[in-house]
Structures are given as structure tokens and as C-alpha cells.
Length: 159
Image (cartoon, rainbow, N blue to C red; front, side):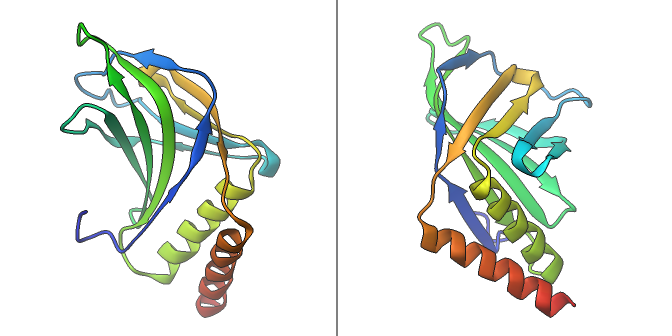
């Protein structure tokens, strides 16, 4: 884990369907990571910083930042096809990391975490790899309560 990361939450998800894609060699400027929360009528359109496979080629991590203080990561788990041409996705998860310990970062991260957890189905689109899927995030009520308390505390301290 990078020492610059102050806080990390990985949100467990349920992926609908199995997908495969060819990993791009480099990212064009227009590539984006799009998150849509229909319940809140809200969407984020972020430029990914990186798309990196793990050393064992079983996980691909796609990272984008929000206000340079919070990063949103999409982890795609799966396997490379025998010919090595494509990656078959069997699971996905989201991570929200605080990169710089500030009230703004805590408020953004806790707001995003809460919105992702409270949304029925989070739509994730990554056009460069033609990934477009709905994720369901399930956490126990006590974890959701913790997130909302952290958000409220950051808001109160900021005001």
C-alpha cells in the first residue's frame, strides 16, 4: 500500500454478467471513468490516471482522482484468456481512498462512500475498455452508519 494513502475503503459489489475486453496500451486523453447514481440524479465523469494490471494478471486497477485529494478505484478481478489477448471479468469492486488528510478530503470521500452504498445500483462506465455495468454494493447497516457519522463530523468541523 502506498504510504500517501491515508484512508482506504473497498466496497464489496455484485457484478451482473461476465465481460471481457482488450487492455489498451495507453490511455487517450478523452478516456473517462463514469459513475452514475440514478437515485441521487448524480453522475461523475472522471479521467482515469491509470489502468494497471496486477503482477499476477488477475486484477486490473483503474484509478481516477477527485479534487486531487480523493481517489476512486475500480478493481476488476478475472483472468487473462489463454491467448493473452483479452481479460475476462468475473468480479468488480470499488475503493475510495483519501490521498491528503484534510476536512475537504474526508467530506468528499465520506459523501461518495455513503452515496455509493445507499444507491441501489451504481452504473460504472469505462468507455476505453467498453465496460458498462451495474454494481450492487452491500454493507451492514452499522458500516453505513459509521460512514454517515464521519461525513457529518467532517461537515461540522468544516463549518
